[in-house]
Image (cartoon, rainbow, N blue to C red):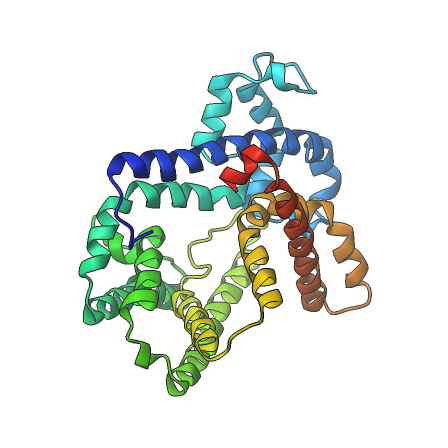
Length: 334
C-alpha cells in the first residue's frame, strides 16, 4: 500500500470504508455471540477454570454483562436480546469504545493506519537506509529497552515522559508499516545473504528471550500482588520489533533461494488469503475448541498442548475463511 499512488478519496472509499464495514459487521456478530455463548451464567461457572477467558479485557466485558445489556438494549430488563432489541446508539458506543472483543484492536489500528496512509506514503518514499535504522533504534529505546529497564529496576512501567511525544517511533501502525516497506523496498538485495540470515536468527532468540523474561517477570509480580483479574499489556511484546523483522528477513531470504512448485504455491496463497478471516473469528475458534486443549493437556505438557490447540484453531479457521470467501458480499470484504 505504501508504494501505491491513490487520491485521498480513493483511500477513504477503498481502504477506510471497507475496514469500517468489516468492524461494524464483526462487532455485531460478537455482540450476540458474547451474550449468548459467554453470558453472565457462563462467567460465574467457567471463567476461573477456562484459560480462554483469562484475557483481562474479555473478563471485564463478561463480568459487566448486566451493564453491557443496559447500555445496548432499549429495555434493560430484557435478558435474551434479539436483533430488534439492539439500539443503534448503544451498539455504536460499544464499537467506539472497543468493548466487544479484545482481538479487534487490530482493526482499529488498521483503520488508523489507512487514515494516515497518504502521509505515510510520502514519508516512505523519501526514507534512506540510515534514517530507517535511526527509526528502529528509536523504537527499541523508547518502546523496548527503556521501559523494560525501568520496570526491571524499580517495578514501574514508563513508556514516555509527560508531554515527550514520539509517535513515529512509538505508534505501531506507523512504525511497522515503515519497517515493512524498508525490508521489502529499501534494504539492498545484497543484504539478504547467509551471514545476515545467521545474524537474524541470533537477534530473534536474543530479543525474544529478553521480551519473554520481562513478560514472565511482570506476570509473577502481578500474581504476587494479587492482580488476577486485570493487568497491563504495556510491557508485553515491547521488544518484539527485532524478532518480527528477523522472521520477515528470513522468510524473504529463504524464498529468494528456493522456488516452490505450483501446488505448494497454491496452498501458500490459500493459507495467506485466509489469515484475515481467521483473525476475525479467533475468539470464537478458541472458545468453541477449548475441549481440544483440555484433552491434550491430560497427556502432553501445557506448552505443547497449547501449541497444538492453536494449530487446530488455525486449520479450522482456514476452512471456514475459505468457505466464507466464496460468498459474494464477504468475498470483497475478506
